[in-house]
Length: 501
Image 1 (tube, rainbow, N blue to C red):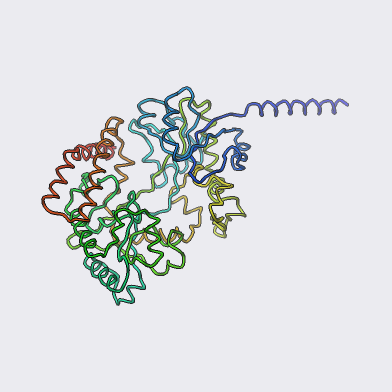
Image 2 (image 1 turned 45 degrees about the vertical axis):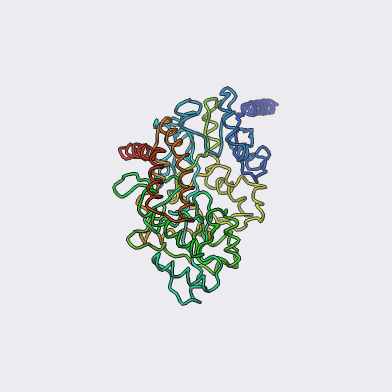
């Protein structure tokens, strides 16, 4: 009887302790970024239910769609006392809200193996964490990174069947390209060359500057081999490129809608067999239909006489995965909850689905995708890219069997690196690694707004109507009056400070 009473008392004590633990569950709130076509309610998602059981932390999400993000975040910061504990998966202005206003919590003291073992163990792989600290040296966000070991955006493609039909070799120079486009036009190809005209990307017309030694990007700057920041649109190669494009425009070798169309319209023309030469991300698993993939082959970027190819180079640097606000009730619990998502299998499940259903562990011990639901079905049961993920290149390739389209992209990057056609240093050294003060960043942004308008208007005019010494000099004078010299100086100062570190 005494033993029975003792057992009952012990059981009661355990139940009391369990009840107490249940009552001590940490409650946190989060602003959660969501894609426009993502209708998943994170508050009722099995993935976060399982995470809650692991961490004893419950998170209440406020889902904020892309179109509403900027407005919602600004309103949130306008009432600091009502800020959530966390801001997840989209960028906010670290220099303004972190460094200047102190509304974001510095995380340096919490980045330990005890609190964030998964994240800390990968932070220095491939120098993945180098771009994260702000201008004051503090860290204000946990990074998001899905590295693929790629180094450039646009790859050059040509219609292989048309080349064979015309008896031509793949073009290696701009002169070869011009001759090829003329032959294609004579053979009935509607638009021998076509591109899109959206923000700088894999299929946009801006890629063509690389053939003239100018690593064009949407910021109009680059780093030369003397580590000096230069204005892309002030270079002789920039003018030579627009003169060449004008020739294509005049002769009907270039789709005139390359100056206006979006990527969807461009892709329709490629799929309809109207295009013979273009730049794009890759061939497999893109807007190009599977039955059309075999029609094209990737080539190295052709080079204009007197120039060296300079393809805009990309670095695989982290985006923002998570911020804690100064209101965060329990930073340790919040960061442990985030880090739990970065455990290898948990992370892979968050992106791909459950083991045995969407992914498997193959014979090499790597995770491999076996099923990708059609029509964005994945959004119905996993967070996909809007969860937490941190995988630098060397780590990711050690745990993940890349899908065929990823392998294709990697092989193109490898070929470009070996051929030496990439720019000296990526523009991301300026955009992501070189940190400006909030005041300097604001000044640079104001100049950029005017500069972008000038460049886009001048570029379209040059391609349509040609370039004269008079129009070129006027363009350079307008850029100077806008403040391009100060724009370049601001980035040079920030880059010099980065190099000094």
